[in-house]
Length: 113
Image (cartoon, rainbow, N blue to C red):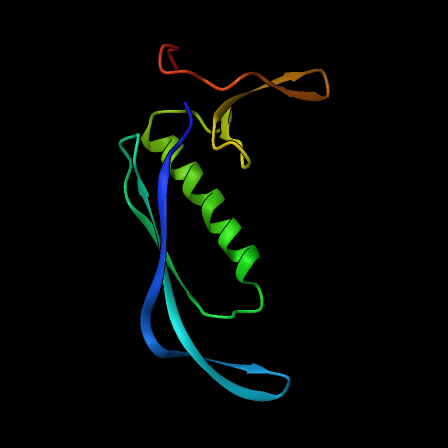
């Protein structure tokens, strides 16, 4: 199964984020990013972060990985055995062979957990 969801980022509070850039105080908007499931039963996820935050990309990626894990749990998957591939958004089963970890093709709707 490939998780399909809609990502929307909008202003939560105009001028609500104050931070320091090159020693000067800068005022930016406080942004909210929402992830809404499209093809699966999962809760809407969101988080808030200041616009132009120095770690914007990293924090966005970390939040998305957390949401993927939460959705797996909501869908009944054991997160020790399954994960969501970051590039394809496919649910993939982990397999360990000795000290190597391999992956299988994405789980389809017809397969049981």
